[in-house]
Image 1 (cartoon, rainbow, N blue to C red):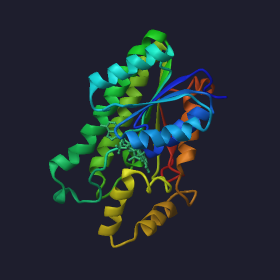
Image 2: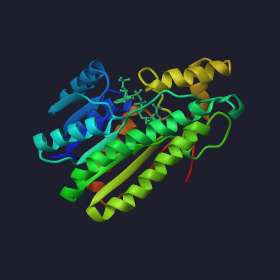
Image 3: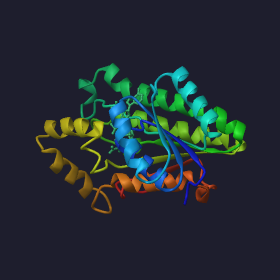
Length: 264
Ligand SMILES: NC(=O)c1ccc[n+]([C@@H]2O[C@H](COP(=O)([O-])OP(=O)(O)OC[C@H]3O[C@@H](n4cnc5c(N)ncnc54)[C@H](OP(=O)(O)O)[C@@H]3O)[C@@H](O)[C@H]2O)c1
């Protein structure tokens, strides 16, 4: 198994990617700690992961609160003996699709500040233990907006490019301590819209363009090299590989999981 004896913490563990990653990490032998905001979603994610035979713990932790995240990670380390993998899968509904002239500065800054704050906080908390252990993997999640151009993307673009820059810089900082940083950049996942904030967010963009959400998603799929969008399990499988020792030379990478919407 890829993650045997590894201890994984997932912030946003009740979310769409968080729950999918929990399932795959559990199947690959990790001890999984899910942290998030809503207990029912966390419990449901934990149930899916426990069905893979793993030990899974659940805690309500505000991923925007440094003290709360530090306390939780310290508890995980004390309980399980290490923190080997820390995935931030926290997501925030935000404004997309508007022209700059129709966008308030607060709406522009909301995703930038939120995503960078939570990723800073969880990476800081986990890296204290990883530096001391001289091993560990921090996993971050960006979006294609980091590399796209066009109307309605400025907040998403600044957020995603910022997070990718943060991940690259942190990889260089923590590499000498044996800590890796891998950022994944998935395209919109077709099966996530039912549970993710993206369902609401993309729904508003589609409606403004006069399209049903399914047609709007078909349009995104049609613009990829593979003619389809990725699905949650593909992203979760990649995260498990990136977190494993098989990827131990991989750091500072932005993994392109856009199905060829963007080519490098
Ligand atoms: N879905 C996609 O197509 C897609 C594509 C590319 C990148 N991504 C990225 O993937 C990440 C996760 O997205 P997702 O689709 O899995 O979103 P999601 O299903 O909406 O899950 C996000 C999770 O974050 C939790 N959360 C929000 N604020 C929190 C806080 N302050 N403290 C703790 N947890 C908090 C939410 O809690 P509640 O359960 O209480 O709502 C939810 O469980 C985001 O970074 C997103 O940009 C997603």
